Amino acid sequence: PYDEFVVYDKNGNHLLTIRPKEQNDSTSTIESVQIFDKRYKTATGLGLNSAFKDIVNDYKVDKVESTFTTAVLFVNELDATIAIDKKDLGIKDFGTQKIALEQIPDLAKIKTFTLWFD
View (cartoon, rainbow, N blue to C red):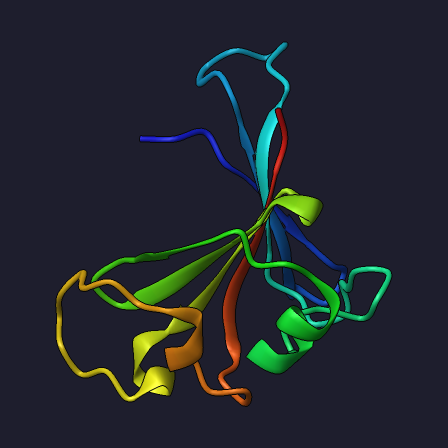
């Protein structure tokens, strides 16, 4: 089980989930912040409301990994991973076959957006 710090706004909307590098250590630094609120955006306006074309128009995708349900895009410039649901790619397999950037439609929506810290 991970220590996670879940941040809500005053209306009870889930904003962020913060995960420390070291579990059960009150002095640990931050490992990652997962964005859950559409109001959070990068300087270029990239956020949870964005589509794949918005990512590739403004940033270089350094790597793509496949999970059972998502294509995970690694954007080193942002120290971020962005997941896109395989359903948006027209892939119905429950497998981890390789996915190329060219297979991802421009309008595929962002499922998750996570920032990573060294």
